[in-house]
Length: 413
Image (cartoon, rainbow, N blue to C red; front, side, top):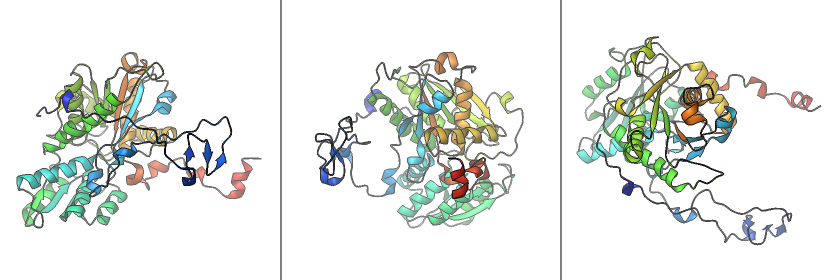
C-alpha cells in the first residue's frame, strides 16, 4: 500500500466558535440577555449557545456524494462506565455517511477511479457488484446520482431493509443462496462474474480485490480520526495520551481495518497503535487458524467474515484477532443503544462485544488500556439499525415496552 500520509497532510480545522448574534425574536437563547423570546430565564440559568459545528464552515453541497465522509468521532462514556473502564472509548459513527454506512466511501472512490482510468464510461457502463449489502447501497446511491445502471448480487440472508433501499435507489437485485460457498457456481461472487461477461458494458468494481478499497480508508478515514484527536483539547478532566492507542474493527473485505490501521500506524508509529480485528464465529478470516476451529458455518451477523481471505485485507497491520458469536453481539448492541442512544447496526455489536471482553477488568487489555484514563480506544461502527429494523434479534426483549394506557398507568400507582 502506498504511503501518502504525513503530519503535514493533516488539515487544521478552526475551532468551533460560539454564536453570539442570535436575536431574541429567533426563539434562541441570547447569551448576553439571558432571555428567550423576551422572557427572562431564572437567574441561576447559565445557558448559552454552543453550536455542534462551526457555522462559518457550512456550505451548499453539489450532491449527496459530497456528504460522504467527515463522520463524527463520539465518546461512549456511559458504555465505558457500565463496564468499569477508565479509558476513553471513542466510536467512529460511519452511519452518518449519505447511504448509511462506511461502504459509501469505497463505493464512490471505486467509481471515480474507474471513471478516471476509462474502465467505467458514463452512459455506457453497467455497474455489477457482489456484496453483503452496504457496498451495494453505496454503489446504488452513487449510480443514481451519476446516471449508471446498477445490478447488485447478494446472498438471501441479507436484510430486506438493505434490498428495499437499493431498489428505491433504482438498483436491480439478484439474490443467491446463503449457504453457497464462495467457490460455488451459485455464490454471489460467481453469479456476478457470469453477469459481467454476459451484459454489454458490464463491469465489476470488485471490493474484494480493488486496491482503492483499503486506500480510501488510508487516505481519508484514518486521517479524519487523527484530525479529530489533534483538534480535541485534553486536560486533567479529560486526560489523553494524544494518540489512538487501540483500534478495534471488524473485517469483511478487510478494507476498512487495513486502511485505517495502516494510516494510524504510519502517522503515530507502528508500535504505538495496537489493532484488533474482530471476526464472527463461522468465518475463517481470523488468524491464527486455531481461532477458526469451529470451521465455516452460517451466522446471522451481516457484513463481516467470509469463508475465504480477501485480497484487500492486510494482515500485517492487524496485531491480534478475536472471535464473537451472534447472540453475544446482539445482546451487546442492544446494551450500546440503550447506553448511548447511538443507533448502530449489528456488526457494531460484534466489534464492541470483543472490545469489552478485551478491556474489562478481567480482560487481557485491562492493564495496558482499560485501566488507564489517558488511553484512547477507537471503535469503527460500520452502519445503523436502519438496515435491520425488522430483525427479531434487534427487538428481542422489547415486547413489554408496548402497552395500553391503563397498563402503563398501573406502573405509577
